[in-house]
Image (cartoon, rainbow over all chains, first blue to last red; front, side, top):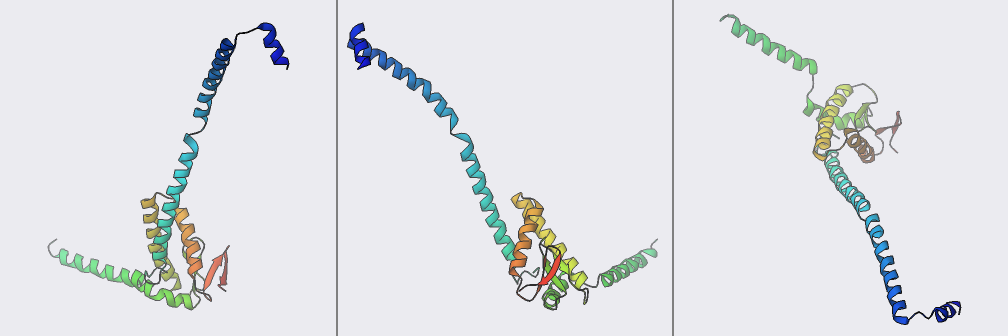
Amino acid sequence: MLSQNIFHNVRLPQKSFIAFSLVFTMAGISACTPSVQVALPNEPININLNVKIQHEILIKIDKQLDNMFSSSSGLF
Amino acid sequence: MRILKPINILIISLLLTLSSYAWSMDLSAAMAQLSTVKSQGLVGEQQNGYLGVVKNQNNAQSVVQLINQARNEQYQKMAQTHNVNLSEIEALAGKKAIEKTPSGQYINIDGKWMKKP
């Protein structure tokens, strides 16, 4: 109710009002996007890769140790 | 000098045979004896990935030394090929060795020898 009254008093034409609101939303969007893009991508992906590689190495070492500690190796 | 040469060779070969007697055992002999000294309760597995002497009888000490040396070489190879610390490999090996020890044989947990239940 209040906002309607204000607009009636000022008699702002509808087209310019739409244009204004468009400009504001565009400004809002363009102000928001860069911060979103910068924040996310690099670090978590790197950590995941490291974990995966280490895990694969651990499996390989585990297999080699299994061979080493089998009765046929002579060392166990 | 010409006369000394064969004598030198004789001396060297004598020393070599003597030194092999002093060793009294090589790796393959140690491997052959390992399971018996284990089942006799003279040798057991430790958390560091190496064998330990429980009772020093029947060449237990030299078996442990030779096998541990061979194990160490294997661990070092693994550490180099996978670019991992030797201590990590040793710890993993110790865990596995203790796991695989059959019940009744000796394991060393936190510095104490005990028969694996």
